[in-house]
Amino acid sequence: MAKEINVKHWADQIADEVIERVNKNKFLKKIVNKTGYFVYDEKTPSGVIHIGSGRGWVIHDAIAKALRDKGKNARFVLSSDDMDPLDKPSKELSKKENEKYIGVPFRYIPSPVKGYKNFGDYYFRQCTNLFPEFGIEAELERTGEEYEKGTFNKTIKIALDNTHKIQKIYADIYGEEVAAANKIPFNVLCPKCGKIATTLALEWDKKKEQLYFECRNDVVTWANGCGYKGWISPYNGNGKFPWKVEWAAKWPSKGVIVETAGKDHFTKGGSRTIANRISVDVFNYPPPYPSNGYYTGPGYEFFTVGGKKMSTSKGRGIGFAESVNFAPPKMLRFLLVRARPNAVIDFQPYGSNDLILLYERYDRAERVYFGKEDLGEKENIKQKRIYELSYVGKIPKRMPPQIPFIHAATLVQVFSSEEHIIKNLKETGHIPKNATKSELDYVKERLRFAKKWVEEFADERYKFELQKKLPDIKLSSKQKKALHILAKRLKEKKWDEKTLFEEIYNISRDEVNIEPKELFKAAYLVLLNKEKGPKLAPFLLAVKKHAIKLFESIKD
Image (cartoon, rainbow, N blue to C red; front, side, top):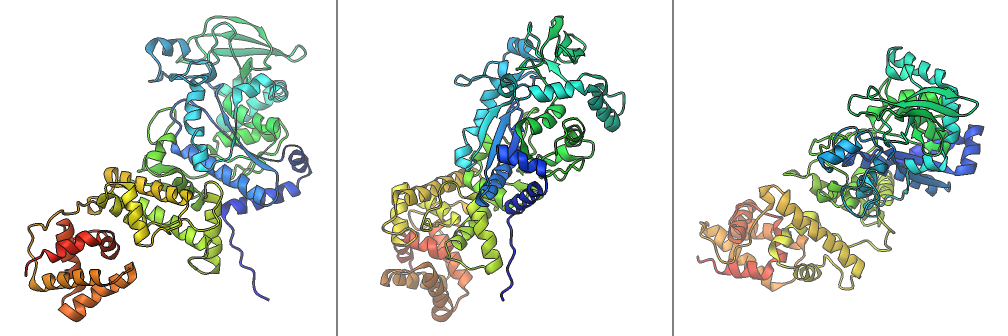
C-alpha cells in the first residue's frame, strides 16, 4: 500500500487545528452551531492603513476559505474600530477641525474627502474597496454600529459588574500604579461635547445600570473636556470599552473562533495577554485561535515594502492601498499566501529581482496546477494549493497565456502599442490564435505592469533602447561573420526560442569558431548599443525583421 503524502498548506493546517479544537469543546461546538466558524479581524482607521494589516486580512481570508473547503460554515468579518478617538492632529484636517475633533471618535469626524460617511469610513474604505482585486471575501462592519445596535450590551454589564476583576488583571500584569488598575473599564461618549477620550467613569450603579461620569481636562494630556457630569446608561452607543477590554469583549459578543494579529500584540504582557485574561476570568469565553486560555499563541510576522514597517497612527511606511503601485494585487496575495504567517516578508520593488521572482514563482505554481510542469508529488501538492488559495476569481478551465515577466518588459520597450505586442506574441506562439477576451486581458495586465516596472522600478540593466540604425561600434571579423550567418538563418525558417538558442551556439562554435558570449555581445551591441540585454533568442524572435535588417547592414 502506497504511503500517503501529507503536505498541508498553513491555512489548511490551521483550519484542521481549529476544527479539532471545536470538536473537543462542547461550548465551542454550541457557538459554532449558532454562528458558524467566525473568523474575525479589526482595524482602527486613524490614518493610512499599512500593508502589514493587509497581511492579516489575507491570512484570515485564507483560513476562512480553507474552513469552507472542508465543508464548514465559515465567514471572515472585518471591523473598523471607528469608536476610537482621534488622539493627535491629522494632516487631512484643518487646524480648526483638529482642535474641534481631538478626542472625538472617528465615526463622528467628517471625512477629509467627499463621498465617505466620516473620517473612519474614508480610511477604511480606501482599503476595503480594493478587496475584490485582492480576492479578499470579507463581511464589513463598524464597531460603532455594533455598540449602537446593542451587540456589546451584555458584555458591558458583565465587565462593569466585575470591574474589580479587570482592575486586578491589570495590576497583576502591569502593577497597581498603572491607571487601568484603578479605573472603571468604560469610556463614556460625552453627550455635550461628543468627546470620548476626556470622560472618566467614577461610579457604576449595578441596579439602575447607570454610570456616573465627568468630562474633564485631566483624563488625557492631549484633549480637554467640557466639564459636563452626570449619570448615563452605558448601552447602545453611549460609550466604549478601553480597547484591550474591548478586544476580549468582542469574542463572546460575536462568537469569534479565529482571530490572530501582528506579533507585536502577542508579546509577553502585551494586549493579547490582557485580552486573554479578561476573556477567561471575566467573560468565561475561550480566546480564539491561536490562543488557548492564558496562552497567547503566536502572532504573524511583519510585512514590509523596501524595509519600511508602517505605523497607521504615525503615518509612515507603505499603505495597503498604496501597495498596488508596487505590484498587482493578485501577486501580493500570492506572496502572502505562499509565505507562512511566521515568516518575515520584505518586498523590495526598486532595483531588485523581487518582482521578477514573484512572477516566476506565480507562473510556476500555475503551470503545476494545470499539469504543465511536474515538480514531484509533494511539491506539486504544495504548489497547487498555493495557487488555489491565491487565485483571484474563478480559476479558468485552461491555463492563461504565460508571458515571462522579463519578456513582457522587453516587449514594452520594443513596441509602441499593446496591439503590436499582442500580434507579436501570437506570431511567436506565446498566445494562442483563439485566445479569449479574458486571456488577452490577463496578458495586457501583465504588459501594463511590466511597463510600469521598467519606468519606475527596474535596474538599468533591464532597460534599453532598440537602435533604429547601426550604431557606431567595433566588431571583430568573426563577430561580423556570425551575425551575417545569423541573419540568413533567421530568414530561412520559423524558429522557436529553444531551437534558435541552439542555432546561435552552433553558429558560434561550429561555423565561426568563437565563444558564444562573443556572438551574444555582438548582437546586443548592434541592436541595443549595449554589451548585455534581454535573453537573446526570444528577443530576436520579437524583433526579427529589424534584427535581420541591422545584421545585414554590417559591412565586412
